[in-house]
Image (cartoon, rainbow, N blue to C red):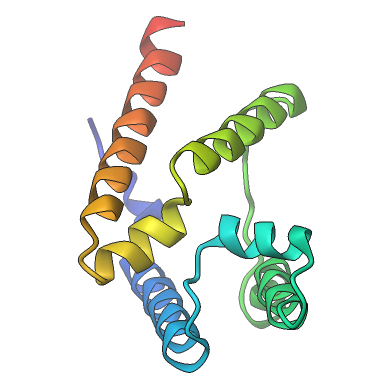
Length: 142
């Protein structure tokens, strides 16, 4: 295994992690809500009274942030080595997984682990193991 040094960007990774941590902390401290993306989207689709505004703003911020970054810094070139069909299947599997896991990687991995939740630790371990197994199977078996 070799490290792709030009792609190794610990500074931007640290900055991104800090922004995510501060945003998740502010959401829980000021709003009493967990920054789990699947839960935020699910609550938006359920149309709970008084919940729509902040959920919509959070999701729109997620969608707008790459364009804001591109306007302020060098645009990123994303390369996805998969077709639309595979991406659709992968997205549906992630959606099913978040329903069975009662949350997503942001809810369990970022917010749950920071609250020392045992359930979130188990869920995050399962997410990681499934990801490792999937990469191994795709790259070495199929």
